[in-house]
Each structure stands twice: as structure tokens, then as C-alpha cells.
Length: 445
Picture 1: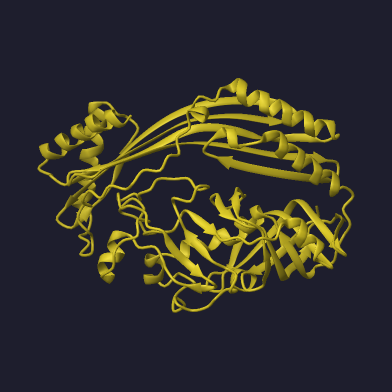
Picture 2: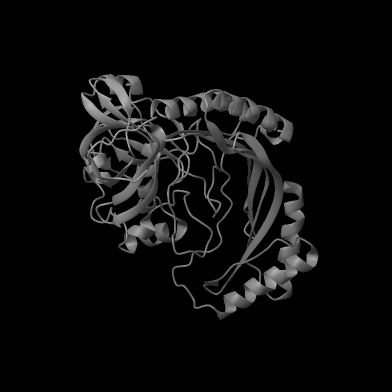
């Protein structure tokens, strides 16, 4: 589509010039997505979808607005451009609106794998059949998805910007359900050959079997071992606050805390688009190359993300983390890497006299935005640990956890791995052993 984008953009520019407008930005994005869904130990759905989306934004005398369309014929493009121009002329001027970005090429990252792009329904069905057989063989019921596809994102403007990124992505998720317990596993990768659905199915089935006949453990504060998905589910909630716009607007927990030691000395967090386990474009929605950020260094908050507008106002350089303009969010880091340690989960369990092992969480909601306190519930594999061994499954808990406190009480870290969770984007994170994790009540199920 990159060659087609050049022609589409030229048609948009011609339509804008016909209305006396010379400054124009266009974003073309698209996806080929295929999904195999299964439940009750059988595939019940196989779907494929192709989407294309054009978004155009003129800049007229300090004003801007955006209009979008999925009609990419000449008439559809013209109508989108004219709608964007009309909206722009009706909008209020923004004295801080930056001009269209100049071209600043970002070095490409190779995240397109023909093996994933060419994945067939048969390939997915065969992998799903093996996974179902593993779960069914354990006397359990399997449900989940296996998706494969490719996406692209292109940005052009009348100042010479020409940025393009395409990548593939595969995801496999499975839940193994027993009469009174369940287990879960999920993984994602740009190369579908890096996924191992059968191993994931066996892991989910093992968790379901090991957590059968769950006992009731009292609510309270425990030492917990959070598997990477659970770490992602909780810690992933805070990174929208590492934003210059959020800090400017007074809605970030980092207000008056940059440079402060908020977390334990063993917590180091980067935004690193070029990490080998990451995904995504090497530039942002303004075309600015993404810069690696040291968000937290040994517990100290160091850097935040800057879009072009907030960076210009502060006299600093943008970091390449902006979203399509205009927007209310501004920017955010999206390629999170939490540095790991050398302690495997098994060793965390062996070193725990009494605690809880958590596979993942869901229904996570914010309670206190400044102290970053969240509530949520465990699910699909919650275990009691006694004398360094898993003693069996326990009923799920509701937790009430402050992320600042949690990340100040991390006793051990596993090596970091790409993780997929329920509530947040995929990240590269370790498992964590955390002291004094607050479970407020036992759930009904």
C-alpha cells in the first residue's frame, strides 16, 4: 500500500489546494486480521477482515481539525478533505499549535514476517486442535483464540514527511476450565513461529488441575508471586501518567515527583521501541522518531514523554510519543520494558514461607489517581504457597493495591519476557515477588 498512499495523498493535496489550503497531513492505516475462535473443545468461528482508514488534517492560521474515511476513491478522499477544512475553519485558534512536522526519517525496525502474514485457517486450526486435545485429555474444557494478521501505518504531509511502518502480529490465548477451577495462558509475537500453542495449552491445563477444589484463604496482606501477566495488568495502568500533557494538566501522579525516588532501587523501567521483544512503529503519529526513555532508574523517576506541542512550550525536544493531533491526551510511552532480575518463579515460590501465587487479574479499576491505588480481582490460577511449595488452589481475591507501595516492596525479579494481559498493552516485564500485597476480600468464585 505504500505506493498507493503516494497517489492517495496527492489526491488529498489537490482537493485541499482547490479550497485554498496548502498545509495538509494524511495518515493511512490498515489491517488484515484473521481469527480462529474456539470454545467447548471445538472451533466455532473463523473470520477474516480487511480494513483501510484515511485521516486528513489541514492547518489553517493556527487552527486544525481532523476528518476520516474508509472510502479511498477520489470522491471519498475529496469529501474527507473538505470536511476537515470546514471543521478547521470553524474551530478556535490554538496559539500553541505547532506547524506540520518536517521530515525526520526514523531507522526502520524489522517486524514483518511473511510466515505470519501467510498464516492460513488450516495452520491455526491445526494448532488449535492440538491445544484442545491437551486440555480435553486432562478432562477439561478449552476456550480461546488464535489470531494472525498484518498492519501498516503511514504518515505524509506537505512539508515532506513520508513515514511508513508495517508489521505482523500473532496472538494465542487459552482458558482451560474444570468444574471448580480454571487455568489460563496467553502469548503474542510478530512471528507466529515464536508462539507455542500446545505448550500454552498444557500450562493452562496444569493450572486448572492444580487449583481444583480451591480452599478459602482469609483476606489480608500476603507475600505474593505475580506472574508477568499479573505484573502487566497492574503496573501497566500507570504509564499514561508519564506524559508531559498529563503533568501540565495536573492529572498525573508524577506531578511534583519527577526526580523523586518513588519505587524500590531494583525497579528500572524504559520505553524502548527497538527492544527485540517489542512491537510497533519506530515513529509516532506526528512522524517524530521514537527516542528511548529512561522512565525510572533504580526507583527514581527520570524521564517522561513529550509530543511536539508540549515540547515546544517547554523548550525541549519531542521524544516521539505523540498521538494524532488534535487530541486531549498528548503523548504516552507505549513500548514499556521493566528490567528483570535473575530469580525464576520457581525460586520465588521456594523462598516463600506463606504467600499467594497470582496468574493474572481482571476488572482493574482506579481508586486513587494520585497515589495510583487500584482494585481488581485474581482469576484463572490463584494458589496458596506454604513452606516453599504450592499447597493448592485458593478462591480468588479482590485486591486493593497502591502501585507506588507495590513497586517499593519487590523482593525478587525474574528475567523479563514479553507478556500479554487482560487490561493493558503487551509489555516486556518480569515476574515479581512482592511483600505485603493487600487482598481485601475473598470473591464468591
